[in-house]
Image (tube, rainbow, N blue to C red; front, top):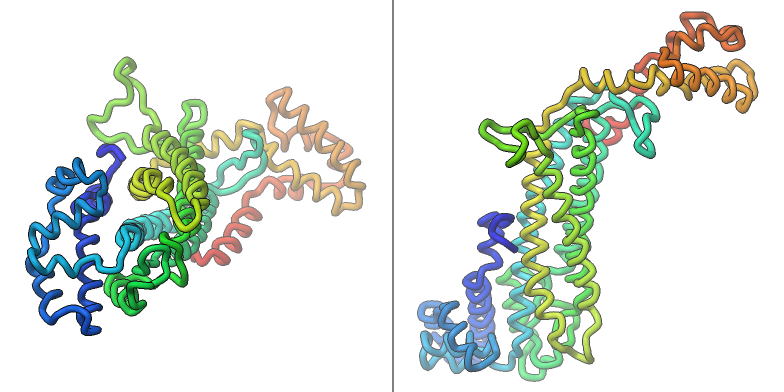
Length: 431
């Protein structure tokens, strides 16, 4: 991932230094387990912890000759650890190191993603309560439908965020597995206690069974969970982009002092954060598909998945972390215009109350289709003549045969919507 979209914490996780440090830790933990079993002389593990070092630049230099990154790594360890290095990597295969390390990095990155989800959940909850009873128009097909409240939008995002937290925790748990089982996963040259010791000290669970690699469905689940997080964030971004359109302007991104919107037009204030998060959500979905493609490998292993994961796993976690935190700032500082929301709501002359009038007529004993025709003809008249729907209804003798003026006026109140929102928020736990 380019540095522009990489927060330092996530960049460090996917750095070469962190990767090789984890590799070294895996190798020494394996030696430590074998030493406890009496298979390695006393003091070897302790000296390895003290003396063994890894240098990414030196490993890269060695790899130019070996054309094999793990062998280059082991060669570098030998250069620093000396004679004790002969006990390193005994009975192990490269994938023991690679897959177990990847699980650690996925878990490390996942903790930041979970933290971002929790922060997003908190800001959605706060702003949902802030605008709980702020009326705005609800749209279907992009057209005014009925009255809702702006807090409902945040409540919906909060609810979806809770599901993403649950999904991602499950995906993290599934992916937090390690293996130290040797070639084709038989443990022929290793006691399973080595794997148990390594995984315990890395915060992982030993995988139940493996080939020479951990089955890639757990990685695909992790990437697909990230893609769903991205889809939620894209939903938020698209909504804000619409609300910020000049002819709508119900809300807009915070425009900081000194910020510029266009190199050509000084007046522009563009929804750049929303557009950025929508764009990055696209390749999160693409990377999720790559994760699924990685599941089918030849026999007990090949390395067709390796080159893919070297790109998609860092990029997906880094991007997800970035857009989560950017969305938190976006929603936390979102500028909202309740007065404009009322103006927009009234652009359709009160037509958003049409279903209430329809249902009230049905309650008065009129057949539904007859009532529909009565309400629709007045709605079209109000729209075509740019006249308030309430006034047009009041002039229709067929309608007023069933209502008093006060009863008709009460149908244009927002109170029923507010009562429903109170019910929904209580169900969400946003009280």
